Structures are given as C-alpha cells and as structure tokens.
Length: 140
Image (cartoon, rainbow, N blue to C red; front, side):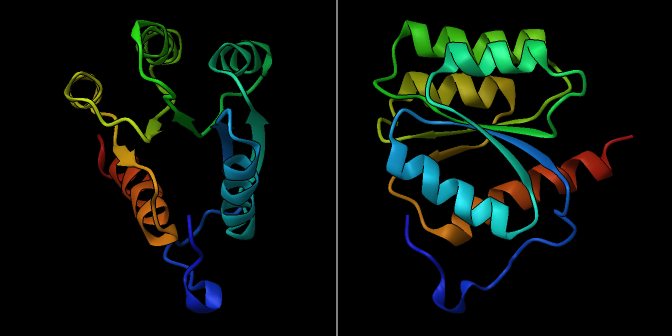
C-alpha cells in the first residue's frame, strides 16, 4: 500500500466510525490502521479471522465495517467470511487479498462484498470504504 501524495483524504465524515482490520501481515495492518485512523476511524486490529469473530462477538456495539484479508484463500478463509456475514449481517465487509482466485471473487460478488486485490493504493481503499458507507446511506 502506498500513501497518496499529501495524504489527500477521499472520504468525508469518517470520524468515530468503528473499523475492525484483520490481516496476518503486521506491516499491512499498521499501514491500514494509519490510513483509517488518519481519517478519524476508531480502529481495532486482529491478526486472525477467528480473533476478529471473537472481537465481534464480545463487542457490545457492532463495528461499522470489517476489512479483512483472505490470506492463502482456502475453504477456511471463505468459511470465515461466510461466518462474519451470517453472524453479523448488518456489518459490511471489505475483502483484501493477494490471491484473487475466481472462487474468492465469486464468493465476494454473491455476498455483495467489495474485493480489493493487493497490493493496493490508498485511494483504492478509501474509495471502497466510501462506497460501503454511501450505499448504507442510500439503502431504505
């Protein structure tokens, strides 16, 4: 992930949005946290999808968004994505992955989950986040 020149903000009104970041790459997790924290988000981090589900189960208030990596996409990581979607249907998810297999992309499409392939630029992440929150406002 590379930062935009001048760290130009694309998103409006992200202050105090709760975002759960899930990635097994500590460097990527820090970069995502820095970008979204800089936009005013309250960021919680997890390095495993199972930990993220535990965090979601323990939180008294729902997260506004989950951004998760699907590392080495397998049945397990897709099952984790389905678990988040089934347990927390009102929490939007954005998927990041270096492995953009057709199976992963099809699963994301079926669940109406934005899919971003790594490496990604900051503007791509911010645009996807903006799209998720804009679609929530537009929904009846």
